[in-house]
Length: 352
Image 1: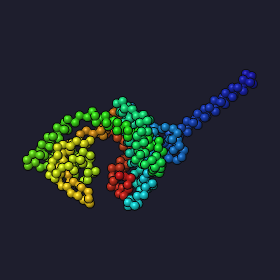
Image 2 (image 1 turned 45 degrees about the horizontal axis):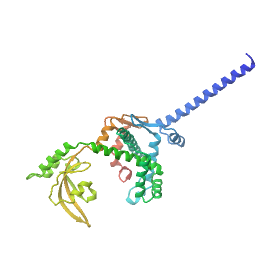
Image 3 (image 1 turned 120 degrees about the vertical axis):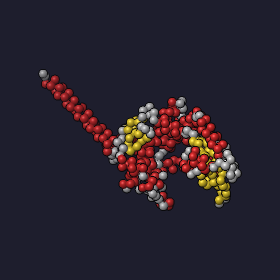
Image 4 (image 1 turned 180 degrees about the horizontal axis):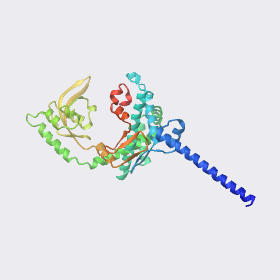
């Protein structure tokens, strides 16, 4: 073998060694990043930057796509910023996410964010199946309505940056567009809903409630859906704007002692009894009781549809509960903490 051939062979070996070493180094860095993201939840600048630039999946929703780690982390930071930018001291409340309890409360917030992101993906997938399409021009038109509510674009941009650290584009993508998909899907659902059985039940209960010597409270307690049934249908005192639209309109047109025909709302059918009416500080208020027949809601339907979209969870803190189609904590201590959250978080506005 000539010296020239020997030199070329050495160079080739050297190149292969360098390439191999580089590949191993890249593999080691990627393995380190993946381990950091999924196993240790590292939050230093390097790993935060990595999740921004590499779309590591937090969850995969079959038939609806991925939710990335960065989506979850950035939304959590926005929620944290919102609470920390408020002056709750004036209300006798305080918030501190730096304590052990505060960190756990923040983790509950993260779980809520993940649940909402999964729901948004499923809603969009269901909407697309029904032929619902929302274009950029549709989103921009809806955005203009939101801007009008804030007076002008500068006001909205200022509030978004101050409260959430968002741009106007963030607001469009994270809030406006998902709400439009949900609204359109809800409209489709309402248009196809058959409430014949619920209407028939409400009419039958109305006949019972208006029969001679009927006890409205007893009928409500035995037949009414929802919390008010347990109280004999008593809804207490309300102003008109505290009542759902059709219920408020009907209640404030009734006479004391009158029982209404079934009033349909987006929740169901309400048979109302006006117990009392008075004016308090110049505001008219009514004391109502109701017999309520719940109809299937969009929320109920969506919960059922969620079961058709299995979720694979990659981040270690959470799991997908297929029975009720919800995200839950893996750790039993966090499950217990979340269950007792209201009792253990008095004075902390972040839990409401």
